[in-house]
Figure 1 (cartoon, one colour):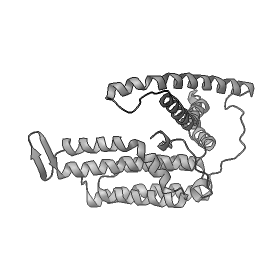
Figure 2: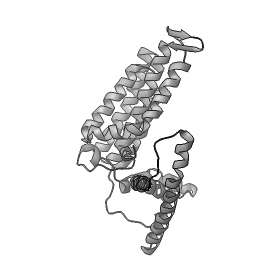
Figure 3: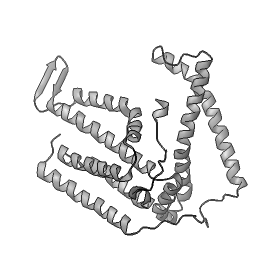
Figure 4: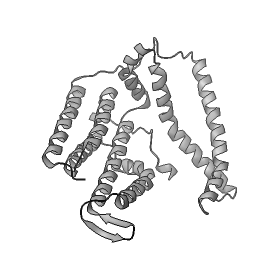
Length: 271
């Protein structure tokens, strides 16, 4: 399961999505997430899924990468689905026994929420797969630059988020090494009840925190040695350009908002 976590990883490529300005990709990703929550029926949700599938096809990122990103959230999706099935009532009652009631509305809501969560994870994964951490930082910093007038250190916030994304794969690899080392010493990390498994994680968390603090100290020392002083006066090797492709893509995203609103009005609220 540890190796299946792909958050923060970048998949090199030369596709249309890879070449888009990171600011445009950030805007489109946020708009897509808003549109997912605007969907009120399966027709508008299916429309958004078609757009997402088209973006994945254009990005040329293998589908197995997205499946790997979904594996860690499978328990959350299953738990949410079960809650909606048993706690949402309405429509035709399909099964009833004592305090347990399963209705058509509960099943529709469970399916709708599960698909919505999957779409949100895939869209955020598409952003990180097609954008390097450096470009993601620059794009986020440029988008939030108006906040500098409020004396908010936007560059620092963007740098913190980028470092967090950058070191997620490193921490995952570190956890895997520590777990293998503990298993080699006879530690049992998989059997027992929840409390026993929680206690078995202590020998993993302690060295992980120690190595993380040491790594943070080394990174800060390296940045100081290179005379890092923040975003003021900083130049960039790659200049960002918001061109015609970016403008058209963002415009299509805005048109998608109108399409979702139209579909919602035509078919109404199903769930």
